[in-house]
Figure 1: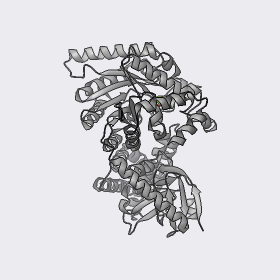
Figure 2 (figure 1 turned 120 degrees about the vertical axis):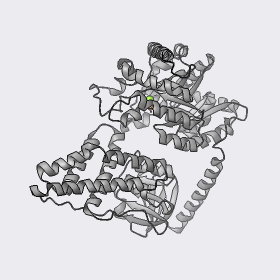
Figure 3 (figure 1 turned 60 degrees about the vertical axis):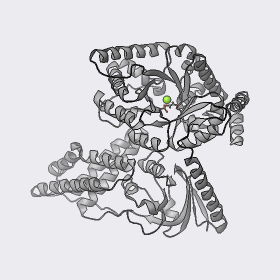
Figure 4 (figure 1 turned 180 degrees about the horizontal axis):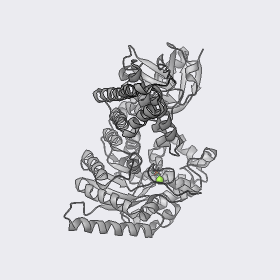
Length: 567
Ligand code: PEP
Ligand code: MG
């Protein structure tokens, strides 16, 4: 019988085919204590198992940047002395057998990660579990049950897929997958997006309903899986797949084009990145540059504030990869929902209105200087622009500019090369910066609108609160008026405005934003071609008329309905 189940969209697209139920080998860990005579032997077993898994990772064929990243992450964790030492200690001081010592250590580490108030790090707990499992297989001498050799094209259904499962799976035979567990930002979901495999996660109990060999459709656009569809539905979905493929093919031809409207307005279409792997994907997708490098990930992935040289290497590499295309590096935007393992933030009633971003940088001046110096030095290798987050006053911008000038003088004295004309811009993401935009633009070289925060602050609606999610809309006329004001102000001063909030990746809004006069769109790599396509097929004059019509509407709902009707 045909049945439909809903989950969380992990990766867009549609796939259909027979189901392969993937179950993991069950691991039973014995509680038996060892004698003191066996301590060394058990410790050696652990060391061998860790070495064996390390060698396996090193020799594994890696075909995507994500696989490379997972291999690196696992290697790094395995070589963390704390991991091995904790296991060895448990064996020696508590006389636990090697399997139990490993099992307990991994569980403790996972629990610590999951308790952190940080979605990104919570998701990384999956990497720890994964490593624990792989080392346990080595310890037990069992061959890991894996997806690396599939004999035909299948849809995988499993309780959970670890990053190792996804990175070692036989990609040519995996049509799509669905899992009971998992979230949108897990490594597994990210890999699915990179590989362009339709996937739905967080389905709760799809493993209870699906059976090996059953036929299934995965609809990654709706976040649904349909088991045993009837012939009519299959036909409907075959048509949808044909249309998606034809559209993909058509958009592929847009990727290296310049986004110029029919009447000659040129927009930059850039990508948002969090690390160098994202940059590889963005370049592949034909980005005109990077409109937002969220450097806080560099800080979050580290166990210490990254040094000047560590940062310099990353920024320099980014410049080299971009071969002259521009990159906007946003200075540290930490605090709010983004914490650091190695730094204790003050306890605050309202962290989103608290000690964060530029406020923190201007307070912890050495942290700020270290980053600015690294950026300046890397600017000798490409077209870097600097951008400050969460600005609310001219004072913050002037202090930052003075600091930058001071650092430039230091570099001059030491004869260290950097881009003398490096631009300094700000994110416009607070109502204060909108209202003060005419003053701020005197000291800023450009604006980039951060709609994710601007919408939450303009509307006083927490961007992460499900209870009021219906009030959070980029289409609210208050937000649209703010966007228009900022763009107009910059143009009057002979400068430009971009947008790096998610609104720039909402392809339903491209024509509206174009009409409001936006000069640069920066968003998800997967949406760049579609944004370019819309701009190439628009007339700027008509888009302006369209935007002023929409600006005249009374409610977010009216604007949204009109925009959706036109797309
Ligand atoms: C924004 O606020 O729109 C933005 C791009 O920054 P972040 O999402 O990192 O806060
Ligand atoms: Mg922001």
